[in-house]
Amino acid sequence: MTSHNLYSNIDTLVFLGVASALISVVAFLPYIADTLKGRTQPQRASWLIWTILGSIAFGSQVYEGASSSLWFAGVQVSSSLLIFLLSILMGAGNYLKKNDYRLLTLALAGIVMWYFTSNAAYALAITISISLLGGVATMIKAYRDPDSETLACWVISLIAAVLAAFSVGRIDWTLLAYPLYLLALYSSFIIAIISGRRKLQHQATLAGRRRTSPTTFSVAMPNTTHIEST
Image 1 (spheres, helix red, strand yellow):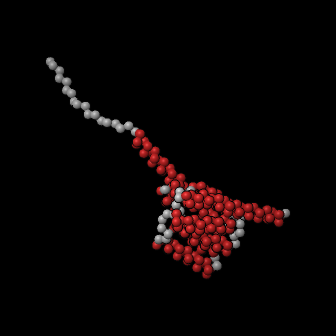
Image 2 (cartoon, rainbow, N blue to C red):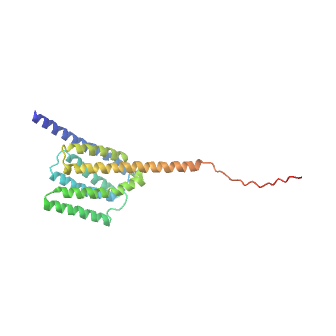
Image 3 (cartoon, one colour):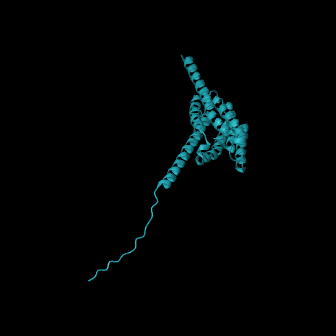
């Protein structure tokens, strides 16, 4: 009975891991399609940083013994690399600024700490912190120009991140950190896009009201003095 329950549990975890990976693939398809059509402009710096740091996170999860959740992490890194390559020709923004080099230097420091301490948690923690900073550029762009981002991609990716977190199968914060971080990141993108669209709708409504409101003219009436004769 014990072995059967264990097998069922493992089978469930594998299902969740594979499902999160497949949903991630589905999530990035509309983003890639919109990029090829010119509707979406990936932020070059963000996707470059996510590709580098996602690779570090993937390696740290392998080192820490992740299994089912690796499907999700692998798809994330592969998709990030593909979108960065597309952003070279069809993206927005610069590649790396001075601050970006500093962030990547911190990531390198995390790898060095991982090497000397044999603890991948250091590299993972620094990687996640830097990745969140790298996502700020996309958040700002999504709010200012919500049509430059594909909302469906981030909504579906959010679902995939939830499944990936459950596929870990136990309370292990080192393994849970990556899917939970992406869950928070994707949520912020969704909020930024929706808020940006509401802002534009509000501005369009105000502009429409100004166009349709009647113009009132103020006419000065002459003073008339009534003189009563006695």
